[in-house]
Image (cartoon, rainbow, N blue to C red; front, side, top):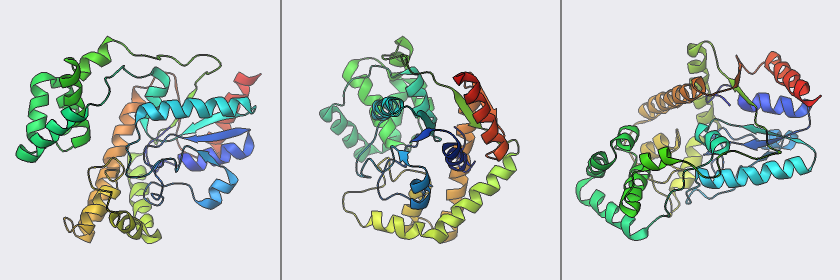
Length: 304
């Protein structure tokens, strides 16, 4: 685990070369095909050395949920274990790690009629009006969800209209499939950079390298598709959202770079906040050889 641009992939690849690990990606953007540069997806050369499971498994036009990830990850873990290897889950989507560890609340299924009603409200009065309605019935969810996050706003209000219960209440009442059963035994490691300014420089350098590598052309290819729009989870990914806005003329080039870097730093801050409250976490300062040795030493200690 760890914030974006902290070196998780490099550490995972090094570990996979020194121990019978098989890597399982825990990244909500890398699941999408055709989204390679902006997601920091491993290159073909790296994948030849250390294959990653759960990348390139969904089309950008589709929404890939945390529940789907949990089912897919458990299936991959079982397959790796059956082959006699150790699953190594690597990524920065903390929600995915949480639902894998803790399970999911038993939420009602989507209701197309209710969703259509909410969408019509948004068309008439804007998503701020949807946010205000949610605030009246579920203040906790409204405080957590930004007014400019249509997908999550729609789902939270839909849950209340379908079930009569708030999403907050459902989460507090209990969850299904709570703990992973044997033979699963999760051990959590996280890269937690001690110097935030170093991480910020890495974020800026990496995004500018993505542009040099062809990020703009990658997003233009997505933009040319008639079935994609800026409200989809894939396109709302950090970096893609800002480049999309640049293509649409909402941002100039320098503004796109600035907003992408700021959004990535904000993402890293949220990831680090998750990690500070994570229980039984083994902290690593960086992705150096020392961290590799630390992880391998621990793995050896629990294997004997």
